[in-house]
Length: 309
Image (spheres, rainbow, N blue to C red):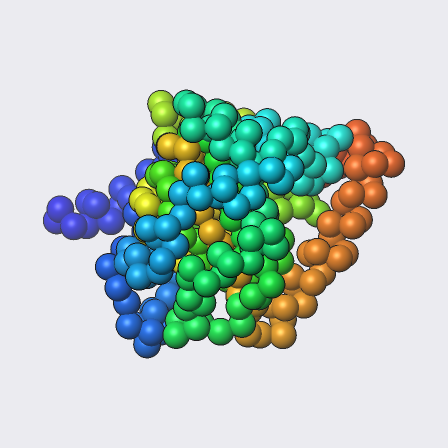
């Protein structure tokens, strides 16, 4: 009788917040298990000890990076979300890497660097880690990328435009991660012709700061919420939405691998060469009209998702 009562009531209960659960953690994982349970079905997983076998785990730190590339000028990004007039990946400031490290090491600083190929400037760093080809193939070995951020800096909700699989290793500091599968894109208010969400998830875990009144479909979104600790390696399947907040000043490295399927490769190529180019041109020529047109479609798509619930 109790079971029947639960069965009747459940469909009419509406979720009050995003439907979040923890990611799966493994200390280590056999390649066969990884491929069958995570890589092939496209499910995220965190491997705690993969990177701890690399020299980089104990060797890489702020002082070492300053010694190697401290004089290189790097683009910096703040926490302000892009608007109708902002082309994607436009830097907000520039400093030398050494100046930047000094700034974020002295306390909370909402500035981050992403897609910085430190290995172009210090190629010896390549010898400090091993490409984990026992887990998956297709790594783009020309482009390992370093990501750094000061405490309180934010990487806003998006999916990677090239649709690659990612192994993202956190070396210094902790980072809180919010992730959703690609299929949740309309519940997340994806902006057409972009890889970004219109909704702002900044500090989403503090007092329910996500604006559910403006973005009610977010309550239907099913995703993951977890913290990456130093040494953790996150497998992020192609197309997964992610929002990251630096709890401490820190840095991470991403190793990218192309999807094995032709369809996956073509989708990434279209996003990079077609979709982004069209969006950039429209932002430069008719930014207000383009933004308003996309915004209407965002809420129309979200409305359809809510109607299905």
